[in-house]
Amino acid sequence: MAYIDYYKILGVDKNATQDDIKKAYRKLARKLHPDLNPNDKEAERKFKELNEANEVLSNPENRKKYDKYGEHWKHGEEYEKAQQQQRQYQNQSQSGNFGGGFSGADFGEGEDFSDFFRSMFGGAGGGFGRSSRGSASGKFKGQDVHAELNLNLKDAAITHPQTFEINGKKVRITIPAGVYDGQQIKLKEHGNPGFNGGPNGDLYITFSIPADLNFERIGDDLKTKVSIDLYTAVLGGDVKVNTLSGSVNLKVKPETQNGTTVRLKGKGFPVYKKEGEFGDLFVTYEVKLPTNLTEKQKELFEQLKNS
Image 1: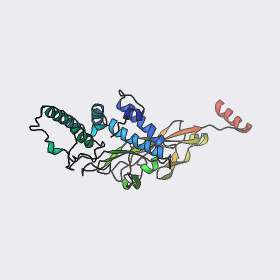
Image 2: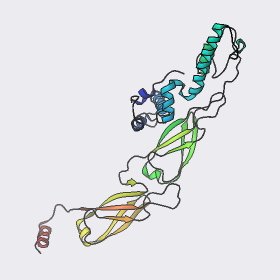
Image 3: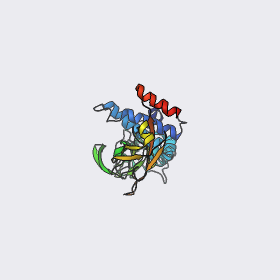
């Protein structure tokens, strides 16, 4: 396995915090995402490397192994054990005593332990974890895969199916209403293939929900602003307010002040995995002052001012 500098791929140094890594990954993932780079093989390759780097460095335990074992981080203990066995074999071969270590029959003629060691970890010696006679050295789980799925706010508010492709295979999931930005779900054994018959890795999907132009989401509640004219603010009236499920008519009380906020119960965001439960929608009134007044209108305002 060729060494890949995951820190370099993410553009961070080795002392980067987990938050630095998360921000770097999201920035690059949006730039290199296949949806934004159709038919660009180089961007696709970089996107895969980026996900691989994030898989390792975003997990403190994986990152610790990577810092210690480098490209062999996933099989660090086996790697270290093989190193010990290599040293043991070399010491025994120099003394002519194989004792309880590997016997010469474990290797093909002309093959030394270094060849076996290279083959264990993907070198020129052949299949993973095989001696020259093809005996299995162990089953190992495949690498996990991390992917980012972009949703707009309205899509995140409804339960719906989504299909995408991972490792050449189409994966279909049902996204529950109420998912939030940065939320991660796990699909067991939908990651990279295992080694030597081991189980596949897992697929981790992180939802990315950009800011919406009309609504601000705070937990399960939504906030929005609506403009009303001065006359409606003073005298009262009706105003149409958009919600995620359509528009509603709202009664404006007379003498409503600029910045007044009212609550529409149950018109907010659906609560994740709690069918029928919703947050609230908070509507803030912005009073719009009239412009291009006629002389008659100005006189009326003067009268109000002096009354």
